[in-house]
Image (tube, rainbow, N blue to C red; front, side, top):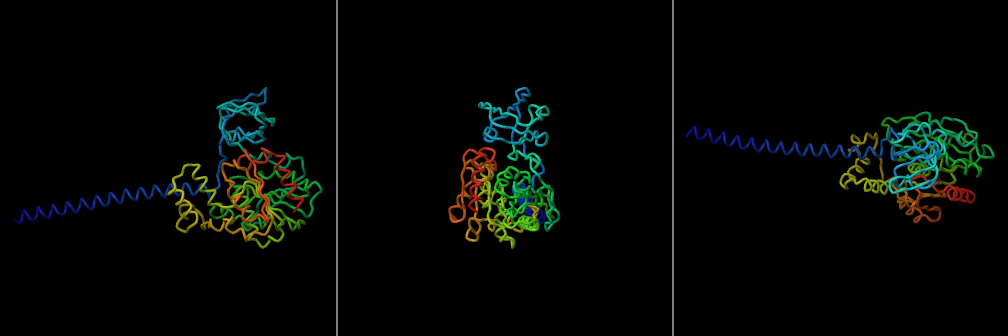
Length: 397
């Protein structure tokens, strides 16, 4: 009997051990799955708040015709659009300026080359299509000056380009977008110069030119606005009395937060926004869908960006309150005239946010819609209408 009881007890212990092992295995599987999911959440959320280290290679050079001065690229939604663009070969150098489409097949598109460095361009390499076109003020044939803006985090380099009448009381501050730098705004300098505006093209925290914050992360407008406030101070010190803020893409979000939060907003007389982010929720939902990010992962990434628990995943020093950056929801607080230029075919920042803002504040928001142009490349596609829209709005300001 004792032997039987001992065997029974051992049998019971074996069953308990099996159950424990099974529970631990299930926990390990669950923990592994949770860890894998959180790693994905971190990856998705960091794409939003971490400044990219490399330029994207979103195009591919198939062939180079040096005698004919053309490049043949793989055809896609961006490379087939008419106009003038920049092309970063292999995502870096050389930088080639390309013009209109010469021919267009099912799989390739051939474009004219406008710059003189075609001899340095190899075939069959990745490239990055850019809306910048100009990289430096000297390409505009205008006078310019290097200046340093004393931001809360340190010195931020900038360019000052006088108007055609010299440096006067009317200034425009150019604010570039996500993953970009101050050269993005050079396309706008001529139309503002002709309209009597001195251009201040700024860098800001974590953009690769301006000072770095402790976390090295974008605040999506919630932190960068204070750097633009410092730029306003510099402009005022140099004689500015009427300032227009021009924001490109995320720069639009920064410009809007500046006038909503800054004590210097009284000096600002209006905003010009090209392909702006006016509501991050709309933009990030759109981009997640376009990238086929599952809804549960998308929602978790947005929550991580906006909450304390997500800081370890995002690397943010402080969460970013995306609701507070929804300018459509806070449109009643806007008091400045706003000109928005947005393409229906943007492909990156949908125009529905711009339309919504224009709908709720038709008294101060003017929306000029374009078609065919891609994100922040309206000037490249339709320079004449883009320039005319800005010039006419400035005259009425």
